[in-house]
Length: 87
Image (cartoon, rainbow, N blue to C red; front, side, top):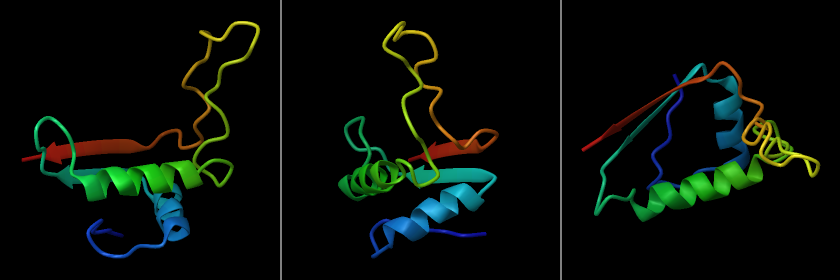
């Protein structure tokens, strides 16, 4: 098992490798005013943006000819499971 506490320092490239390595990703976070805390939002922004062409995603899956078709299919982490728990 690999974990990350977003309040601590983390290496973005190591976090990308954790996503690629994992079978299940579990997010456990408080919800404040219907939103996630800043540190968690910052973590997701940094890691998912850096994941472009680094193993997480290559495009949004759409094309110019028919942009609605296949939108959201450009991700590379097929078969992963995700769990979100909140308090």
